[in-house]
Image 1: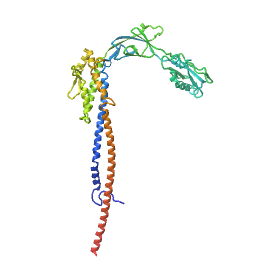
Image 2: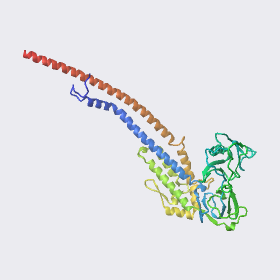
Image 3: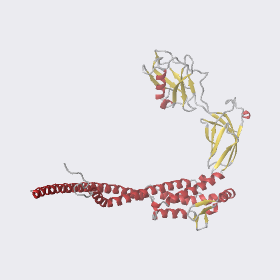
Image 4: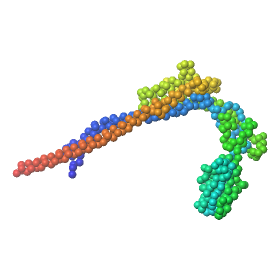
Length: 458
């Protein structure tokens, strides 16, 4: 059995010697690992910078056209009956809205049965009809549903109807009303056009009779009915997008006792809607842009991007769009100031005054005329779209090159580790052989010494 390393025979710390020699050989690998660490840091910093560019582009989108910049808001005198949301296309003004009736889809509720899974009905063809069926696809006004011994229970019929819901537009469910025959089939239309839902069971044979519709608790489909400035509007939805241009109305509550056939609008409470320019919203868009620009600046100053000419080109280009040397206009007119460190700050008082006193001028500065004259928002967007392009952007090739370099380093490091392992194994074998040789020589020396002592005594 060979001797264990550690200098037992030679007296040398062979383990330390091997470790030192391997350490010398590891130097190239250590340098590659350092290069990989730097490359990863640079890649992370570039991706962060790219993300901040996308964020800045999103904020610039809110400045580049008058439609996007000139935010509006709608204020309702009460939100009991409805709520209103204004968009940039809305025209400032006042409107009077009365909600007479809410839209609702039809719910056909059928009488109950004692058990939903064991009570069996007839088999054959169950026909489901309503007014909203496509007359071309279903000329007789019915969707046929096959019922056999596998699905002739209430649960089975529910599932069979739902399997055809893409065709019929009707979904089925089962409710439990807690009575002696609690399980009720409920058919619900998809839209208000799916009215007068019926089930024709005349082609079913055998089994129990299918429950009939309970008209006392069923609810018919109906449209929403509102009045806007005296004009009556009907809608299939409780969300109205064209009753007031640029404003979405969400209907919440109908008038009590409203008669759709003979409406008495004088008895319906009016909600006043006021649409105004949202100056605070415009100011926030400018402030959000400044915040996003500062985030980008901070990302550009990452230590891993030091002396990166491409990043500096991006920042210089964007900063150059904030001021027009031709006519001396710029964001400074809105109270946006460049600090010594390159960051932007906003004088909110000056910005608010510019918006309230000269909204047209603010629009012209930021969005141009939306035709031929470009504003700061247009110029910034042109550059940002170019910089953030996934194929031609300034960062696209850089990230690809760095990722390729990291993959190459990984391969070189792996090969270096393999060579280093082989080198360490070689040293271990050599030193082990040396220890064994020294041990053998020591043994021979001891033997000769013993023999010499014996000879001397003789």
